[in-house]
Length: 235
Image (cartoon, rainbow, N blue to C red; front, side):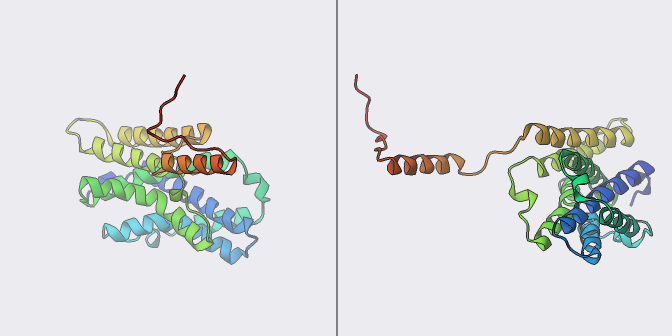
């Protein structure tokens, strides 16, 4: 592994992502009025879930088992949530904070995968996994609909940061890794923030067929006859 890839800027991105995702996990438990044990568990699994899966897949030491501060950050975040009203965290602010964590984790995951010699496409996927899997585990355990089952731009934003990181780091030009990571982070965060602000989403499969079926059912309920596709309109 090329240790020079793992620099302090990625360490800060790592802790930012951990704290934000741990916060989102703790808030799920808070809204369900669970105990602090449950809150701490949700904070931990959300904060480290994606990175754990990534490290297992790239055959790296599981990062939070080597760092004395990661679990402490997750549990400390849960403690903050425990002593604060949930309403403090409601609104779009948490969504934007989550976008920061998503982009940070996507950059970190893909850069670390490259450092371990993972090929470009799997390395980019490791960035997506790092950014998204912790939230998926949280939602599955909580019995909630996962963000990946929604059309809004979430995984897409993580993919943008990951692909930019991998593609730029492999270019045979003299661009510093710091510049690449910052640009990829800003791009992913900007896309996710715009999706939050303007409610952007991807088109769903078969949406037009569903809408057509709903329109026809509405016509039948009103006693109207749906026009034949071969019929012509006469003056």
